[in-house]
Length: 187
Image 1 (cartoon, rainbow, N blue to C red):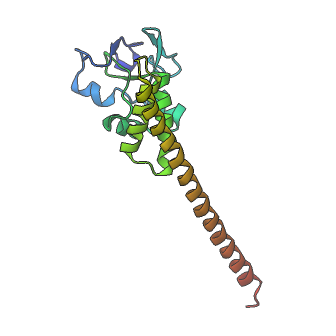
Image 2 (cartoon, helix red, strand yellow; image 1 turned 90 degrees about the vertical axis):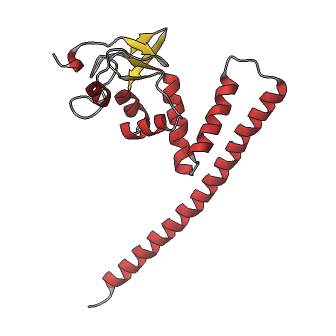
Image 3 (spheres, one colour; image 1 turned 120 degrees about the vertical axis):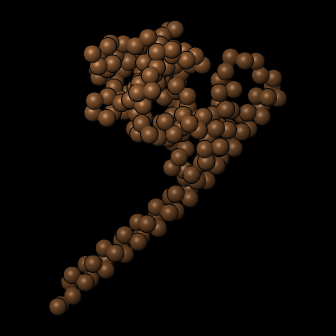
């Protein structure tokens, strides 16, 4: 029986190791028969697995929801930006909606040219602001200033992109005009 047909795997919380992982399981655990991660924990079309009151989904569903490739999601995991909330005993990466939200922040920062370190810094600040831990007024003010700094930087980067887009549109317009002139000229 193929391990993909075995039904929903049991979940191993993040930070613990599955004892039954073989070397072959680690490389193929996230990839279904078509080379794309299966939707849900039980394979294509399965609902996400509820663990500790939280819904978990496999990397393929996360990729579909975020429009990021499996390779990109794994890269962000290796960089420590988004770690799977759990792993199944079969080695499947399992993510929550919160993990997907983090990936969406990263996806939105990337085209603006933010570095991985800047992404990590913003995620750390928002995690601390959203966390259950008690923050002093001073700590909260510092974190809010960090987030405001990112908001300001994003605004500047968007303005720069608008200027670049305008220049690119002017260039394309120039090419269209030249083509029309060349096509209208007698041979």
